[in-house]
Length: 173
Image 1: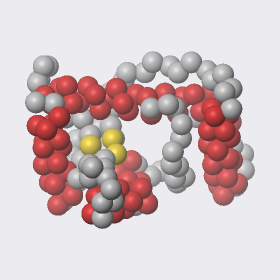
Image 2: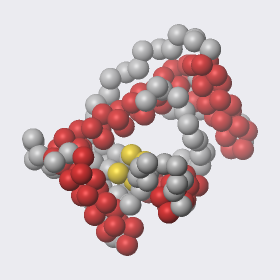
Image 3: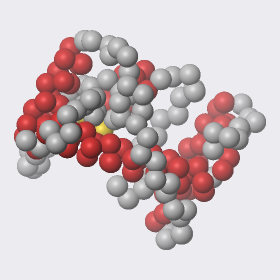
């Protein structure tokens, strides 16, 4: 929410969002939080928010595609998209500050060293944010990602749709 990078995983460019999510440590961490909640916590609901490029799961909330305007699904999807917009703006600011990681440029080093550069810029980006360095104004990008044609249907997906439905009923109906 405040344009900080909280987690980073660097993979090669040929990995799609679904693959990265399925094999991410963050996914496992969220599942562990949900399955073994801290007793001091009042609310045991832990979620990450993804855009339309991700497959819903019990711990990953995604927008509903083609929700009717004014419906609870529409209000929920609008909120998810606006939240994701902040994430995309953070990426944009990061790439403006460190132009070497902008997609228009390329790092002419072996992949391992390039990965270290990306990680170092993320750490420096957060450091600069906390030191009060003025940051570029985030671009207002409200584009919606392409809708995936076919989701991978498994128990996670089916449970994810049910969790999303319950979340909408509990918070947006």
